[in-house]
Image 1 (spheres, rainbow, N blue to C red):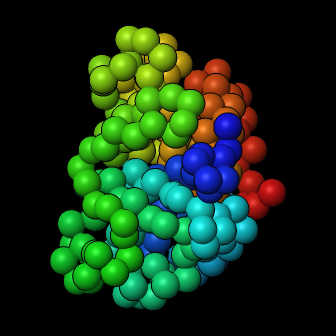
Image 2 (cartoon, one colour):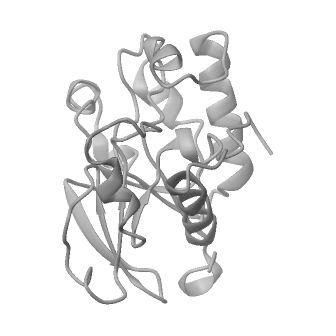
Length: 196
């Protein structure tokens, strides 16, 4: 389901790492420069997310950026909710968060009108409603299948990675998130294209 209450679309994203040159090599992103990566991420974001839509960011929005965070934030559509990641503390000290975010939390529980969802930058083994029909959406892991915990993540269908590295470098609605995670967990190619 793409639309929440009132016809507003709800999107999820994580680990954009705007401004972080080394993430291109670290995650094998298909960009020749940090400028190309940033502009593609901004384009993809605004193509999906309208100004009236809601977007939940599961952390690591910026890292080692030389362009001020507010310059990016002013260009990004949607009502933004930030779930704090491990790389967010430095840039967060430099701006008035209330100017750009409707909420800033370490963890949140939401209901999109269909399902209960727990949001955290880090994947969790258990969460409220996780044993039933609840979902947990996270970031942090990027597209790394080599970690010791990947088999565990793979075995948990209600645990979903919102990282751009497995979601075509775009914010995604729940159904696309589910589809992309299923492909990633089956070790299929996730169509890591720059844009649709």
